[in-house]
Image 1 (cartoon, rainbow, N blue to C red):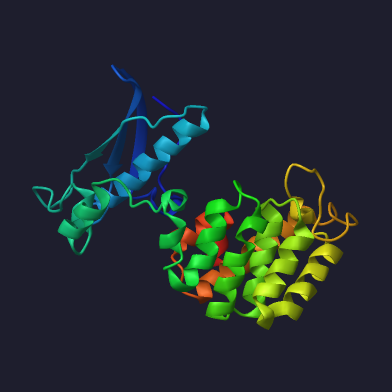
Image 2 (cartoon, rainbow, N blue to C red; image 1 turned 180 degrees about the vertical axis):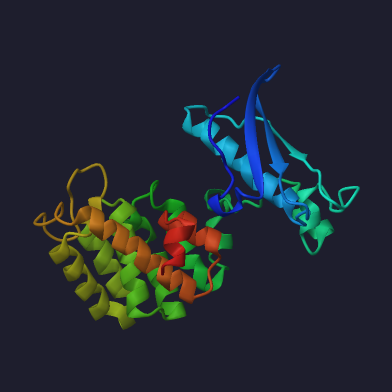
Length: 272
Protein backbone atom coordinates (compact mmCIF):
# COMPACT_ATOMS: atom_id res chain seq x y z
CA UNK A 1 0.00 0.00 0.00
CA UNK A 2 1.35 3.41 -1.01
CA UNK A 3 1.20 6.49 1.20
CA UNK A 4 -0.67 9.66 0.36
CA UNK A 5 -4.07 10.68 -0.96
CA UNK A 6 -5.24 12.32 -4.17
CA UNK A 7 -8.65 13.45 -2.92
CA UNK A 8 -9.20 17.17 -2.50
CA UNK A 9 -9.40 18.39 1.09
CA UNK A 10 -13.02 19.49 0.78
CA UNK A 11 -14.09 16.02 -0.40
CA UNK A 12 -12.41 13.89 2.24
CA UNK A 13 -15.53 13.76 4.39
CA UNK A 14 -17.36 12.20 1.44
CA UNK A 15 -14.84 9.56 0.38
CA UNK A 16 -11.42 8.11 1.10
CA UNK A 17 -8.83 6.55 -1.17
CA UNK A 18 -6.09 3.94 -1.12
CA UNK A 19 -3.34 3.27 -3.64
CA UNK A 20 -1.84 -0.21 -3.93
CA UNK A 21 1.26 -0.93 -5.99
CA UNK A 22 1.46 -4.27 -7.77
CA UNK A 23 3.96 -5.98 -10.03
CA UNK A 24 2.66 -6.86 -13.48
CA UNK A 25 4.23 -8.56 -16.47
CA UNK A 26 4.86 -5.07 -17.85
CA UNK A 27 6.37 -3.63 -14.68
CA UNK A 28 5.00 -1.75 -11.70
CA UNK A 29 1.31 -0.91 -11.74
CA UNK A 30 -1.28 0.42 -9.32
CA UNK A 31 -4.78 -0.30 -8.12
CA UNK A 32 -6.45 2.90 -7.01
CA UNK A 33 -9.47 2.48 -4.75
CA UNK A 34 -12.02 5.10 -3.76
CA UNK A 35 -14.56 4.33 -1.01
CA UNK A 36 -17.62 6.59 -0.99
CA UNK A 37 -18.99 7.64 2.39
CA UNK A 38 -21.95 9.54 1.02
CA UNK A 39 -25.31 7.93 0.31
CA UNK A 40 -25.91 9.95 -2.84
CA UNK A 41 -23.83 8.82 -5.84
CA UNK A 42 -21.89 11.37 -7.87
CA UNK A 43 -22.79 11.68 -11.55
CA UNK A 44 -19.25 12.61 -12.65
CA UNK A 45 -17.42 10.09 -10.49
CA UNK A 46 -15.91 8.43 -13.58
CA UNK A 47 -14.18 11.69 -14.44
CA UNK A 48 -13.01 12.18 -10.86
CA UNK A 49 -11.50 8.70 -10.83
CA UNK A 50 -9.70 9.52 -14.06
CA UNK A 51 -8.25 12.67 -12.48
CA UNK A 52 -7.03 10.73 -9.46
CA UNK A 53 -5.53 8.04 -11.69
CA UNK A 54 -3.62 10.67 -13.66
CA UNK A 55 -2.38 12.14 -10.36
CA UNK A 56 -1.04 8.70 -9.41
CA UNK A 57 0.70 8.48 -12.79
CA UNK A 58 2.25 11.89 -12.26
CA UNK A 59 3.63 10.88 -8.88
CA UNK A 60 5.07 7.75 -10.49
CA UNK A 61 6.93 9.95 -13.01
CA UNK A 62 8.16 12.26 -10.26
CA UNK A 63 9.78 9.24 -8.63
CA UNK A 64 12.16 9.01 -11.59
CA UNK A 65 10.26 6.76 -13.96
CA UNK A 66 9.98 7.70 -17.63
CA UNK A 67 6.93 5.66 -18.67
CA UNK A 68 3.37 5.75 -17.41
CA UNK A 69 2.13 2.96 -15.15
CA UNK A 70 -1.18 1.19 -15.47
CA UNK A 71 -3.51 2.54 -12.80
CA UNK A 72 -6.74 0.59 -12.31
CA UNK A 73 -9.42 2.76 -10.66
CA UNK A 74 -11.88 0.95 -8.40
CA UNK A 75 -14.92 2.48 -6.69
CA UNK A 76 -16.55 0.91 -3.64
CA UNK A 77 -20.17 2.05 -3.55
CA UNK A 78 -22.78 1.37 -0.88
CA UNK A 79 -25.30 4.12 -1.50
CA UNK A 80 -29.06 4.08 -1.05
CA UNK A 81 -29.78 3.78 -4.77
CA UNK A 82 -29.21 0.31 -6.18
CA UNK A 83 -27.74 -0.56 -8.55
CA UNK A 84 -25.19 2.22 -9.05
CA UNK A 85 -27.12 4.65 -11.27
CA UNK A 86 -24.38 6.32 -13.32
CA UNK A 87 -21.97 5.29 -16.03
CA UNK A 88 -18.54 4.09 -14.97
CA UNK A 89 -16.91 5.32 -18.19
CA UNK A 90 -15.52 8.86 -18.22
CA UNK A 91 -16.59 9.43 -21.83
CA UNK A 92 -20.21 9.33 -20.69
CA UNK A 93 -19.51 12.41 -18.58
CA UNK A 94 -19.48 14.47 -21.78
CA UNK A 95 -22.61 15.99 -23.28
CA UNK A 96 -21.69 14.22 -26.54
CA UNK A 97 -19.99 10.91 -25.67
CA UNK A 98 -19.58 9.88 -29.31
CA UNK A 99 -17.72 13.07 -30.16
CA UNK A 100 -15.63 12.71 -27.00
CA UNK A 101 -14.70 9.17 -28.01
CA UNK A 102 -13.61 10.42 -31.42
CA UNK A 103 -11.37 13.03 -29.81
CA UNK A 104 -9.94 11.12 -26.85
CA UNK A 105 -9.62 7.57 -28.13
CA UNK A 106 -7.05 8.37 -30.78
CA UNK A 107 -3.65 10.02 -31.02
CA UNK A 108 -3.73 13.76 -30.44
CA UNK A 109 -3.65 16.04 -33.50
CA UNK A 110 -0.13 17.16 -34.36
CA UNK A 111 0.97 20.11 -36.45
CA UNK A 112 4.64 19.41 -37.16
CA UNK A 113 5.78 22.67 -38.67
CA UNK A 114 9.21 21.19 -39.41
CA UNK A 115 7.74 18.95 -42.13
CA UNK A 116 5.52 21.50 -43.89
CA UNK A 117 7.03 22.90 -47.12
CA UNK A 118 7.79 26.62 -47.03
CA UNK A 119 5.58 27.10 -50.09
CA UNK A 120 2.60 25.79 -48.12
CA UNK A 121 3.46 27.83 -45.03
CA UNK A 122 3.41 31.00 -47.14
CA UNK A 123 -0.27 30.35 -47.90
CA UNK A 124 -1.20 30.50 -44.21
CA UNK A 125 -1.87 34.24 -44.34
CA UNK A 126 -1.04 36.18 -41.17
CA UNK A 127 0.18 33.14 -39.24
CA UNK A 128 2.73 32.33 -41.97
CA UNK A 129 5.28 34.76 -40.55
CA UNK A 130 5.51 33.05 -37.18
CA UNK A 131 5.36 29.57 -38.69
CA UNK A 132 8.22 30.28 -41.09
CA UNK A 133 10.37 31.65 -38.29
CA UNK A 134 9.47 28.71 -36.05
CA UNK A 135 10.40 26.17 -38.70
CA UNK A 136 13.88 27.53 -39.34
CA UNK A 137 14.88 29.46 -36.24
CA UNK A 138 17.24 26.78 -34.89
CA UNK A 139 18.46 25.32 -38.17
CA UNK A 140 19.11 28.18 -40.60
CA UNK A 141 20.81 31.54 -40.66
CA UNK A 142 17.90 33.94 -40.32
CA UNK A 143 19.54 36.26 -42.84
CA UNK A 144 18.61 33.67 -45.50
CA UNK A 145 14.95 34.22 -44.62
CA UNK A 146 15.07 37.99 -44.25
CA UNK A 147 13.59 38.72 -47.69
CA UNK A 148 10.67 36.32 -47.21
CA UNK A 149 10.02 37.63 -43.71
CA UNK A 150 10.08 41.23 -44.88
CA UNK A 151 7.71 40.39 -47.75
CA UNK A 152 5.22 38.86 -45.32
CA UNK A 153 5.52 41.79 -42.93
CA UNK A 154 4.92 44.29 -45.71
CA UNK A 155 2.04 42.27 -47.18
CA UNK A 156 0.08 41.77 -43.97
CA UNK A 157 0.89 45.10 -42.33
CA UNK A 158 1.73 43.89 -38.84
CA UNK A 159 1.75 46.42 -36.03
CA UNK A 160 4.95 47.85 -34.59
CA UNK A 161 4.41 45.79 -31.44
CA UNK A 162 4.05 42.61 -33.48
CA UNK A 163 7.26 43.34 -35.37
CA UNK A 164 8.98 44.07 -32.08
CA UNK A 165 7.80 40.76 -30.65
CA UNK A 166 9.08 38.95 -33.73
CA UNK A 167 12.55 40.49 -33.46
CA UNK A 168 12.67 39.78 -29.73
CA UNK A 169 11.89 36.15 -30.44
CA UNK A 170 14.50 35.90 -33.20
CA UNK A 171 17.01 37.59 -30.91
CA UNK A 172 16.18 35.10 -28.20
CA UNK A 173 16.39 31.88 -30.18
CA UNK A 174 17.66 32.60 -33.68
CA UNK A 175 20.99 32.35 -35.47
CA UNK A 176 22.75 34.55 -38.01
CA UNK A 177 26.34 35.53 -38.71
CA UNK A 178 25.28 39.03 -39.76
CA UNK A 179 22.79 40.61 -37.41
CA UNK A 180 23.20 44.06 -38.93
CA UNK A 181 22.64 42.61 -42.40
CA UNK A 182 19.49 40.91 -41.20
CA UNK A 183 18.00 44.17 -39.90
CA UNK A 184 19.18 46.07 -42.97
CA UNK A 185 17.48 43.58 -45.30
CA UNK A 186 14.22 43.80 -43.35
CA UNK A 187 14.34 47.58 -43.54
CA UNK A 188 15.06 47.58 -47.29
CA UNK A 189 12.43 45.01 -48.24
CA UNK A 190 9.74 46.32 -45.91
CA UNK A 191 10.21 50.09 -46.30
CA UNK A 192 6.98 50.84 -44.45
CA UNK A 193 8.70 49.59 -41.29
CA UNK A 194 12.19 50.97 -41.90
CA UNK A 195 12.22 53.33 -38.92
CA UNK A 196 10.46 50.80 -36.71
CA UNK A 197 13.08 48.13 -37.40
CA UNK A 198 15.96 50.47 -36.67
CA UNK A 199 14.31 51.70 -33.47
CA UNK A 200 13.61 48.16 -32.30
CA UNK A 201 17.19 47.14 -33.08
CA UNK A 202 18.46 49.99 -30.91
CA UNK A 203 16.14 48.95 -28.09
CA UNK A 204 17.33 45.38 -28.28
CA UNK A 205 20.92 46.52 -28.11
CA UNK A 206 20.34 48.93 -25.24
CA UNK A 207 18.37 46.51 -23.07
CA UNK A 208 20.59 43.53 -23.71
CA UNK A 209 17.48 41.44 -24.28
CA UNK A 210 18.59 40.30 -27.71
CA UNK A 211 21.24 37.95 -26.52
CA UNK A 212 23.12 39.67 -29.20
CA UNK A 213 20.95 37.90 -31.69
CA UNK A 214 23.43 35.28 -30.77
CA UNK A 215 23.86 34.39 -33.92
CA UNK A 216 25.70 31.63 -35.43
CA UNK A 217 28.66 29.80 -34.28
CA UNK A 218 30.53 33.05 -33.70
CA UNK A 219 29.82 33.20 -30.00
CA UNK A 220 28.63 36.55 -28.80
CA UNK A 221 27.95 38.10 -32.23
CA UNK A 222 25.33 40.74 -31.70
CA UNK A 223 22.55 42.62 -33.36
CA UNK A 224 24.20 45.74 -32.01
CA UNK A 225 27.17 46.00 -29.73
CA UNK A 226 28.32 43.44 -27.19
CA UNK A 227 27.57 45.85 -24.35
CA UNK A 228 24.84 44.70 -22.04
CA UNK A 229 24.01 41.41 -23.72
CA UNK A 230 24.12 39.31 -20.60
CA UNK A 231 22.41 41.91 -18.44
CA UNK A 232 18.74 41.14 -18.11
CA UNK A 233 18.93 38.20 -20.52
CA UNK A 234 16.63 35.78 -18.71
CA UNK A 235 14.05 38.44 -17.95
CA UNK A 236 14.24 39.66 -21.51
CA UNK A 237 13.62 36.19 -22.91
CA UNK A 238 10.54 35.65 -20.78
CA UNK A 239 9.25 39.14 -21.56
CA UNK A 240 9.75 38.49 -25.26
CA UNK A 241 7.81 35.22 -25.04
CA UNK A 242 4.92 36.98 -23.32
CA UNK A 243 4.87 39.74 -25.92
CA UNK A 244 4.79 37.20 -28.73
CA UNK A 245 1.99 35.26 -27.04
CA UNK A 246 -0.09 38.41 -26.54
CA UNK A 247 0.19 39.31 -30.20
CA UNK A 248 -0.66 35.79 -31.33
CA UNK A 249 -3.69 35.64 -29.04
CA UNK A 250 -4.84 38.99 -30.41
CA UNK A 251 -4.59 37.62 -33.94
CA UNK A 252 -6.53 34.45 -33.20
CA UNK A 253 -3.67 31.96 -33.33
CA UNK A 254 -4.35 28.50 -31.91
CA UNK A 255 -3.43 28.07 -28.26
CA UNK A 256 -1.29 24.96 -28.86
CA UNK A 257 0.67 26.77 -31.56
CA UNK A 258 1.27 29.68 -29.17
CA UNK A 259 2.56 27.29 -26.50
CA UNK A 260 4.94 25.69 -28.99
CA UNK A 261 6.12 29.05 -30.30
CA UNK A 262 6.77 30.67 -26.93
CA UNK A 263 7.38 27.84 -24.49
CA UNK A 264 4.79 29.33 -22.13
CA UNK A 265 2.54 27.08 -20.07
CA UNK A 266 -1.26 27.14 -19.97
CA UNK A 267 -1.19 28.95 -16.64
CA UNK A 268 1.18 31.59 -18.02
CA UNK A 269 -1.06 32.11 -21.05
CA UNK A 270 -4.10 32.46 -18.79
CA UNK A 271 -2.42 35.39 -17.03
CA UNK A 272 -1.93 37.39 -20.24
